[in-house]
Length: 409
Figure (cartoon, rainbow, N blue to C red):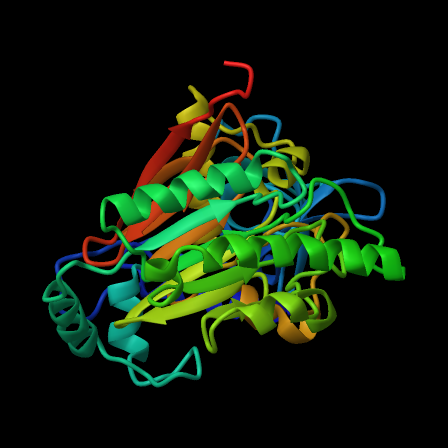
C-alpha cells in the first residue's frame, strides 16, 4: 500500500521542472537532485535531499523511510514549514548527514502536487474511475455543454444531518421551502452523516427499527416537495457513527435493512446510498466527497515539525494542502485511521479531482488550492442551519445559512 503511494507521488515529483534533470541543450544547468538513504552510507558531512515516508523507529525516534532503507531525522533545527506533518506523510527533506548516521534536517516540506491538467496530459488515456477515460479536450467540451444549461445544475451539500435531533427536520424543511420559493431546484442533495447524534445499537431489533424510523420521517418530508422529489437526486454518505460504525476506511454504504422503508417510499433511482468516500463524475468533472474528522485527527497526530501558523485560515489551508499534496484522503498512521488495504485506491487523489468536499464537524470553509476547489459545509445543526451549494459551471461553492428561530421567540 505504502509502496504504491510512494511510487505515485515520486513519479509526479520527478516530472516537476525543479526536480527533473535538464535536457541537453537547455539553459538550465542545475536542479534539485533526490537521493536515497542507501547513498548516505560513508558520506558523513555531505548534504542530501531525500524523499520518503515519515515514521518512527521502535525506540521512538523520528525517521524517514524510502524503498532502500531508513535514516533517523534530527528536526531540532528545522524551520516551521507549511502544511501538517504526521506519521505516514511522504515528504522531501534536505539536511546534513552526520557521523552518528543521522540526518540533521534543515528544510522539510510536502512534495509539490501535480495539477489535474498536467496529470491528464500524461495519463489522459487511462480510466482511473472505471467510467470511461476523458482527455483534457473532452473535459473542456463537457464544460462548454455545462455552461449552456439554464438554469445551471447545482449540488446542495449538508453534513451532520442528525435525523434524531428535534430541530433537524424543521431546518431542512426551511431549506426546501427556500428552494421551491426561489425556483432553485438542485440537481442533487448530498447528505453526509452522521445521521444520528449518537451511535445506535443496530445489533438489536429496537435499534434497527429506531434507525429506520429516522429515515422514514425524512422520506415523508421529502415527498411533500413534489418539484424537488421529481427532479433531484439524493446521495447519502455515511459518517463515523452510522452503521456499521467501523473505524476502517473506506466505509461501506448504509446497509439496506436500515434504509429499506426509505427506499420503498422514494421514486425509483432517486436515492443513492454510497460509500465514504465517494466520487461523482459529472460532465467531465470529478467530485470527491469525504466525511471524516480529518482536522481533529491531523492535529492530534502531528510529529515534531511545527507548522507555520498565523491564524485559523492557515489551519484550513494547511489541511487542504496536506491532503492534496499527499494525493490521499488519509495521510495518517494506521493506528489513527485504519484502512482496508485492498481498497486503498479509493482514497487516492491522483489525478487531482476537480472538487473535494471535506465534510467535517470543524468550522466550514471554502478555498481553491492548485486548481482544486475544496470546501467543508460544516455542521448543519448549530446556531444556524448551515450548508453549502456547489456550482459545477463555475467550479466554486457558496456557504449559506438559515437563521434558527427558537420556539419560545
